[in-house]
Image (tube, rainbow, N blue to C red; front, side, top):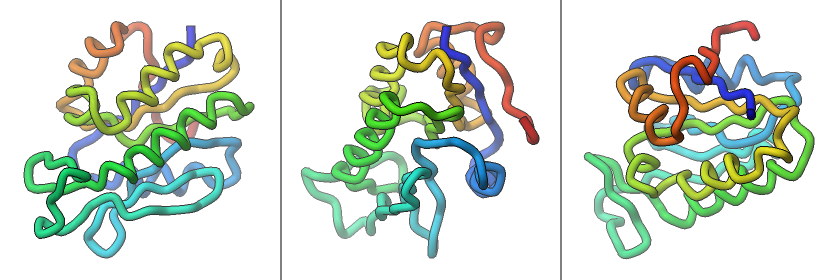
Length: 159
């Protein structure tokens, strides 16, 4: 079984910032979702490339996804999924998915990449998978990926 870790906390509590600081000098890949100048971005952990995910409400189109008050650019989610999927075939100690939320529960956002992770279990046996999850969604996440609380580790600093 793939070693799965959960890092959870309330919305806007600094989870991504703490994780980004912890990741310095770690053999890690995947996606972080920092807020930069009041907009959500996706950041490739391995290359440090970032792309703006969150758009203004006036940018709503067929190429966007709306969840609550947020408008997200679909092509940036597709890029983020590609970053995650490409990381599966490489040898990393940590594979980070920041974050699992309502979009993933509905099959959008990072959902395709998350499915790929669990399909590639034999390729990831030496990789720790870390999901950043809002506190209130942890049980829904576990149900969604068919795991129990005993199957996962709670991520605590430092690991």
